Length: 152
Image (cartoon, rainbow, N blue to C red; front, side, top):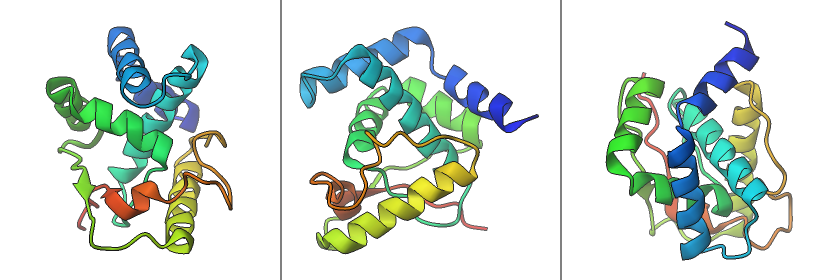
């Protein structure tokens, strides 16, 4: 299987109606000006993030915008559990951590490492969803959310 096949398979695990529901939920709850195109790209970025998070022993940290989609997906408990099982053979936990502080440098570094892991996994990172240095929204998730790394 090629990288392209793998990425397409990951994206195909999200049915069109589920994609629409996630986009609608993120738009209504947090990002009202989001376009349909941004919504589709956001769902893909979340799926790529989860695919990488499911297969690393490192802590993976989403950007703020990717985390918005992850939060919406976690609330769709059955489809989320099914996605995790199909993708990883296990549940991918969303782990809030409010004790690690809000250090912007650490946040940017954690997101940069995660974005690098996504690229190494054969996916493309979208700059609108993985902000570069000095982006205002790039540290929120580091302060509060990560995956549950695979313990090998």
